[in-house]
Image (cartoon, rainbow, N blue to C red; front, side, top):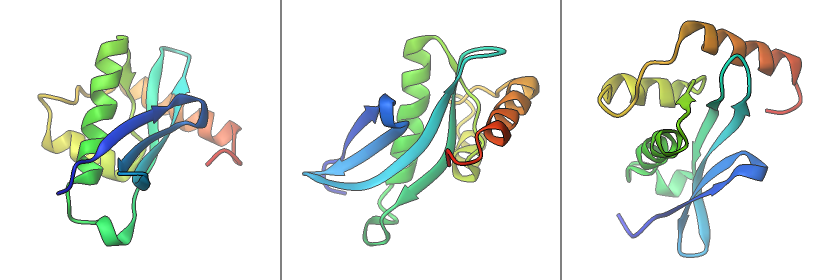
Length: 114
């Protein structure tokens, strides 16, 4: 895999993977404030010509690294991130079910966001 740079565009709610100046994948997420602060990934997308290169996994890993650095948790709603977390329990602590429920409720309250 060529060198991938991952950038957090918090204002856009995107963790982006770049190969040079081309965005090759991203995770769309939002920040949940209550009942606890959490990063909530909703979608993971990798451009078809870049699939199979570990980009989605690198994005998921970096999201958990960012959360740990900020002292918050990840409450994954994105099916890819859920599966990635199941395969990497040492890097991806399980989110409290009530936090996941609150994240789903936030999405319902903001239907045009994703």
